[in-house]
Image (cartoon, rainbow, N blue to C red; front, side):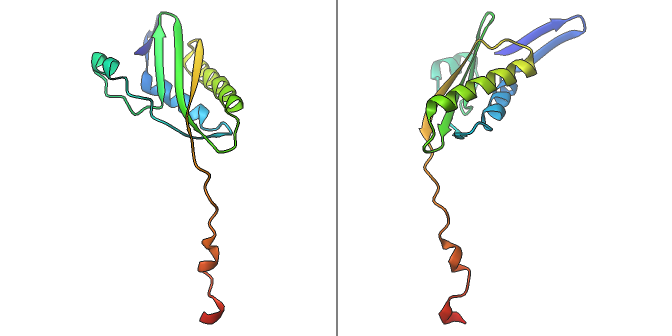
Length: 134
């Protein structure tokens, strides 16, 4: 699927990859989003469309004027999904609309997982000489 527009100067075509990149770049700055997850493989539609784009965290569908974006995110620990998802919806919708000029009807945010909390490095003292090494 691509977004096609025509004007007196010529045609404008925006690919799915560009829309997906806009959505990911907007969502990555939202507090609480730690990473993105690949969408589940839709084998039937992948074969029908002849596309091998199965690793993208963004799914874009268009039915006439309806334009829907689904994005798969992983949350940081101890973040409330409702607040993170609402912010992701807002920033993705605004970014895609501003950059493409097309109306986004809906942004679906799918919580794919929670990234484990990274433990701070407690090995900082290993680089310093111990008392017995002096």
